[in-house]
Image: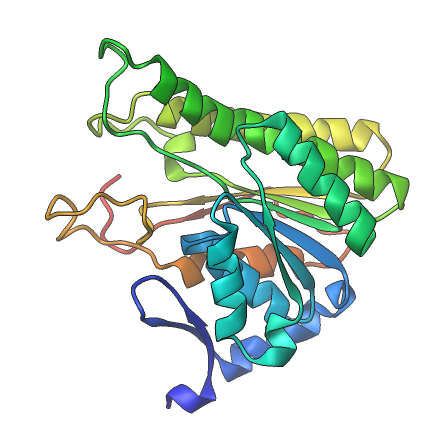
Amino acid sequence: MMSRMFRFTNKYKRPLHLPRPVLSLISCKMDRWVGKVAIVTGASSGIGAATVQALARVGMTVVGLARRAERVEELKKSLPPDVGSRIHAFRCDVTSEESIVNAFGAVERQLGGVDVLINNAGVSKQSCTLLTPGNSDDLRTVLDTNVMGLVLCTREAFQSMKRRQSAGHIVNINSILGHKYVPFPNLNLYMASKYAVTAITETLRNDLRNEGTKVKVTSISPGIVRTEMIPEGNQFADTPMLDAEDIVGAILYALGTPAHVQVHEVIIKPVGEMA
């Protein structure tokens, strides 16, 4: 059975897979992206790593941006040569504007520019509340990663698309928490940062229209996803969760729509989730 599946792997050593008929349908719809360049932020694990694999498998040249770029290199080596050869690992810290500008500049020089941006990098600092003394560094990290990092990566990607008149696509990995308040403990600025992503996505849509481009922007808002962001222990032992490939499927769906169709928002929740 598994030999007939489209496989990914994740940190849990479980295969992430899509049935072959689904892969064939996706590949057909993704034809216009074959040979084009995608950048995925936060590419070293979870949704980012699964997205890097999926886009490379459908024929895109994929740049995985991560602070832990060596993990993207390890991922590349674990894949069939024809897939791995399409993956490029670039070290990038999205909390640093200099690091972002340098990474996108390197992509421009080496690969010619970017056509698809997956803004996946995100962080939650669950060690403090908004009232915890000395919490400034943690709070700034959340905002710099989840908000400013996304905005600056989008700015650099759009300039590349505009210069080359590419009808590109920007996908923001948001959260269900960007649409409703849920009283989880110690989320401090995480929910506020995701509400910001919701507003930023709509602001970008207006900016892109005013620029007269055909660049699309999509927000994908999952419920709880089984990734490294989930704390260890029994806190979420009985909580329904999504897997990374569930989010990858939504990304591929949005990218595979016809040029005149723009998916504004996709909300994905596991069956049984209470939030």
